[in-house]
Length: 309
Picture 1: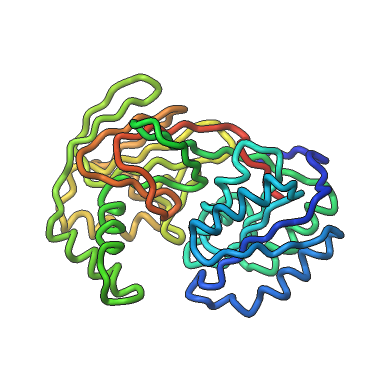
Picture 2: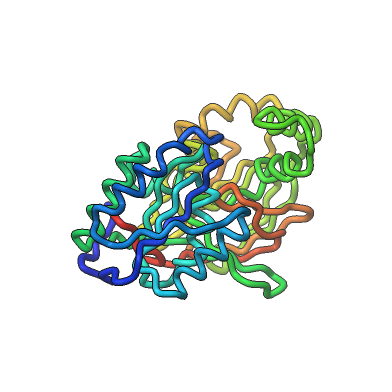
């Protein structure tokens, strides 16, 4: 059950809204005026942020928080929400995710309705009533000492991350077929890789094709890769899929949507506050967004964001 803190940081500044009109292939684009109207029923000015690229979106969120926004709302999928989280993580500024993308795992896993208009109603009511639900985030630290990143749902550092990296390098085909082709290419090249993990200081070495570190249970639009992850327990769930061959991996993949893959004998699950992860040639993906090359350190940060629920 999510914790509740009432009447924390009553907004005085405007409600800043980051909206991604291309999220979910644009199917919710026409809802934005109604979403803004419903948010406006909370009695606070609503300010729509301007951004043309993901980097501009993240910068606009940081600027809005620095300028005294009373709350930040992100309308889009996990990628849009990921950008917004960078600005509110570790602050008192409350946050409302409106799920309007292809993958809406963080919003749904933290209790928001899957319907965008219903989620906007929940956020507006929380603003009116001063409700805040603090939940954990994961802090991602690079080995080279670069700036930390935050994520809300899951970090992928195995076959799924390799497929994303392949798809992002491809110029065609466009749309979801590019991702499907990337899967086929990487399946043909599938091989276990040697991973070194340190979980709360305890070392592990494994040969694996899948490694996921979850603050929440799901990624990829409802795939319950870390089915027991709880974003209020102060811990990260680590799921490792071992020496799978192609046929076994494809047979197990449908089980991930139900979370039953963790019973497979080649899958191991762990829980830790701090996860250090090493492997050669892997770029991690957090909330579906390209993150940091391994090695990385991931730390559970309790109550790092205050959700408007």
